[in-house]
Amino acid sequence: MSSSTVLQCLKSWKLPPSLCLKICLSLSTFVLVFFLVHKANLYNPTAEFNFSHAVRHYTTTTASVVGDGEPTNISHILFGLGGSAKTWPKRRPYVELYWQPNVTRGFVWMDQKPPENETWPETSPPYKVSADTSSFNYTCWYGDRSAIRLTRIIKESFELGLKNVRWFVMGDDDTLFFPENLVTVLAKYDHNDLYYIGVDSESVEQDVTFSYKTAFGGGGYAISYPLAEELVQILDGCVNRYAQLYGGDQKIQACVSEIGVQTTKERGFHQVDIRGSSYGLLAAHPVAPLVSLHHIEAVDQLFPSSTRVESYKKLVKAYKMDSGRILQQSICYDLRRNWSISVSWGYTVQLYPSLLTAKELETALGTFQTWNSWSDQPFVFNIRSVSDPCRRPVVYFMDRVESVGREETRSTYVRYGDVLEKKCNGDNYTATMRVDFVNINAPQFSQDLWNKAPRRQCCEVMSNSNVGESIVEIKVRGCHRFESVTPPK
Image (tube, rainbow, N blue to C red; front, side, top):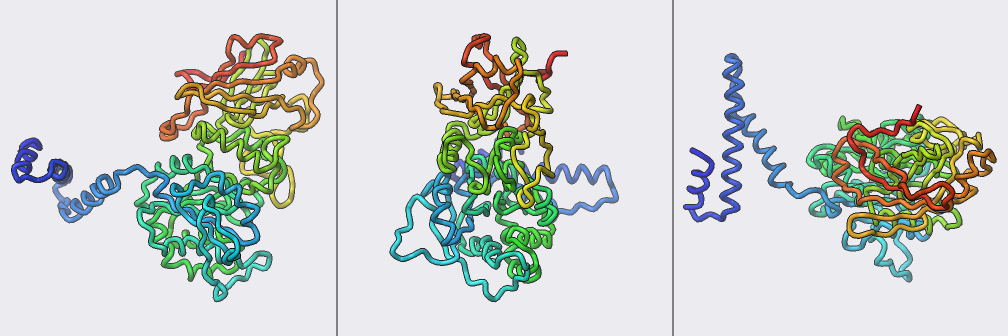
């Protein structure tokens, strides 16, 4: 009997059309499963047809497709932010940069109830007071017992019993999240499976101490609902078993390891375990959507002549104009003038008066030090030295960004002279120092591109950027087939 015949038969029973279609599709899928298993048995006469297994597999697959057909969106994410009465007043402005009341879901978990004479602002996440943890063991001599409270945020969040939660995302009150990109990352994964998603530290010394397998809590990590469901069953016992561990994120990783789940690393989460200027790190962002930035109070302000809050406001403004493109690097050459240009969209442009390879340009400038020892290395990625002034770029910072029609942006970057201290006085820099502004036109970045193999986008210097002009015009775009950033011989 054909599927159309079945559909006509069902309609004759006066069932709703949508239900008829679902029943028809389900029967077709079942028949296909039966046929494939039966076919496999024909080629293997000694095999026994496991009908119950076939039915179980079919049911699971159908539930995933039909029951959870809606793509993951921001309403499926529940944030659990670690805060305290001491830190919240100062850090609240950063959280409110990304928090959208009645859109973003979650709570900031406090160590005590805020003063009764203070009204909790509607622009902030609602708060919860963490449960008492005095009965738990904590033996890390250089740590703080607050780690226990932070560990249990996932358990207390889960036990709220909120509906339609697919992911629990943990972070700190000094973490800046980029929610649309977070959704893009989590939507790649099946929330019905056991997932623990995040990233380790940038500083090797931190990873050696706290484990490369730990998804660091400041950078944020995501736990799927099924994993949370299993995790909360053993969490309190884990807290005592791992009383010697320093942080809540360490303890979570230890508990997750008992379940057997591995860390899924996403490079857009950033712990930012660095000191000094994060410029070099952000100017060479990996080809991945920017999800989070931690330690936003500990590093230098992102933009010169701006406060930290003003700097992050400017970055978030660019992010809201084109969320998928924020901090994405593009590399191109001006062969008439032998210039190399690196763009970190929404943040900075670097102009070099020589032809550097793409391998060198995608390597972060060492403008920062390690978190604990304040050393120049080691990090979990390569850096290039800024000690030679004749190898430093002329640096431009984003001044403004605006929409051009519905599907394009135009951003302007202004030269700033002192970000990398003294520059080379050689003749090669004479022409580059005449350039005061860089304008960049770029099409709106499609979030669907993150579902494809990651590739850095290309750029080109427009022909109206003539020698001697104070403005360079650049177009950022997707790369053509067989296009590469290869300097001439």
